Length: 308
Image 1 (cartoon, rainbow, N blue to C red):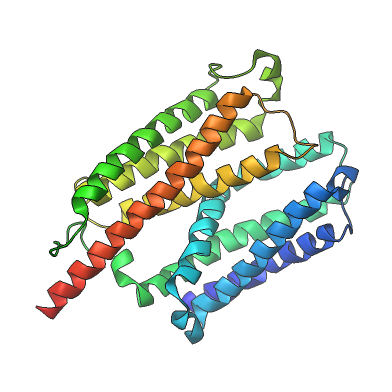
Image 2: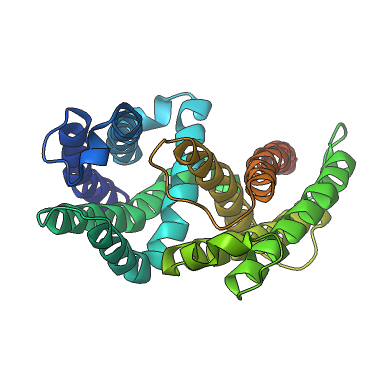
């Protein structure tokens, strides 16, 4: 499975990479707006991300991948899973919504075919890359995937620090999650009354996704540190990992796209948007740091138990 999914992810992301290369150099662009410098910079960035995704997919299924430095693998995987997994769950609705949105903006007819390739690439890599990662992590970091939630602790552990930080971060995630779910349900507190019509299907779904993953991350983080609420380590670990990556990567992307001169108006008040976006970035980073502390102590404890 690890090898098959690794090659499958590399093949799936190739059309996306080729499209991004073409757009970066101004070829086959669907609208005149995408020819400006800000759009080219975004396409160049996502082109690099796609290339990194192909390298990661190959690393997951080849022996040399297990010799790479841990941070060189973990950092892009953290960002990538945060971008791909939530998007994959929304793809059946977000894909048609994106096509409709761009058609209304005056996109060329061939844009629909390009979008189709993009959607297929994202869905393919969103399915194959996590499965290849699971096989890779099981071989290299088995303590991150299996076993009970409580495996004991050795002297010098940081559990009390983990609990304190987790409670603070979880409170922030719950607040952010409530705000986003409230907006997705149609709430208008913090929304500019003059921009209510800009709340399309895309905006509602992304607000709901952010809110749900923020709440899931709060649960996962508390369970990982308090060690109650789940017998197995994997469910809270997966929830916290995906949530932290999602909060960081999606909000960073939103922050960068918001400064484009042709950016679509947002229904939130500017201050509300900045606060929720930057809060998501900070919360994602803090969650990632707590996860590292949890994994460090867990690895020490498991190796200590094996030595005994």
